[in-house]
Image 1 (cartoon, rainbow, N blue to C red):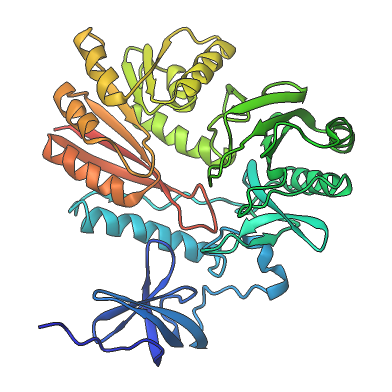
Image 2: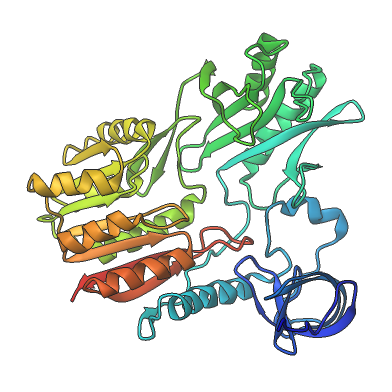
Length: 456
């Protein structure tokens, strides 16, 4: 017999919010039935309109708040366009940190069934604004002028944004400058439905330690109207500019970057440092977007690895070698593996840039390459994993359990898949010693963790 739901679509009801979901929506319960409502905060009483019902939960729309949380921040409507992508914009920063730390603790106990793990207080930022060193914004047209900003939630409608509160000022300035110049030169924006027009996205990347700026212009067409004038104007107006790159993406796709990239002006790369390690960053490079907190996270990974200079380390999912080179400062030898061949080329170039000869990189799937290394006698004393949001491949987890490294340092961007993988490693003979959450992305729901596991 099907359960009768305590609410129906279009009902107006009074609720008390108890918690937040993993994506920042308020959770209220009506006779035990969860109602998820964007904008609600724990402890608040409010009126909600039910806009959707399902078997296990419903969705509400916030109509009126009767009693506000002390952590609520009211942002004027005129300022809201500056908070694109910030799901926690309405929560005071200390409240955001509480939410993120709880998110980690709940995932560990609920998903990982890990009750006795030390979870340290989250490491937040002293100044949690204007931290992102990269932006890539879609371009459109309105009233004959170009607009650029972010997409409204669950739509492809662009909200024109003159400044983002989470991007570095140099990145904001670069985006606005390029938008203005392209608009003045009447370069037409890309239109998604008819698949016409030219300018799809504007990207800016900035090296915080070096002060070097890169602009990437992403178009549907191989040719850019008034290209020479465009390059001349951009290079004249942005004094920190080191590179202008053109990327062509002619496909009907939501993927931002296409396959063809050419340098229009300046150098192919800009440089930046994490600690003492120097990195070359191209238009296509994966590089952490919060340089301040990246240093905090990598310092913690290095601390957990506790290297004396005699260890062999394997870095699975090594990307362009950021963690690998950090570890190579203290290890005897570091082996890095990554599935993207271009990232491995970047990693080798970065090793050379820093004069590090004790690192070796291979392109391929970690679960294939690491067992091969193991058979060749390259057993790891410490194994580091920093997987994408989906977590570690099951075959890699099996490989770790078979290889039996003394320590595993797990860097994660998703508490749910982290907890799942820790459970597998625990069942395979490892002990989760401690977890350090790090707030890499203030005002968003994302949280990073660095975890130390040791062989039982």
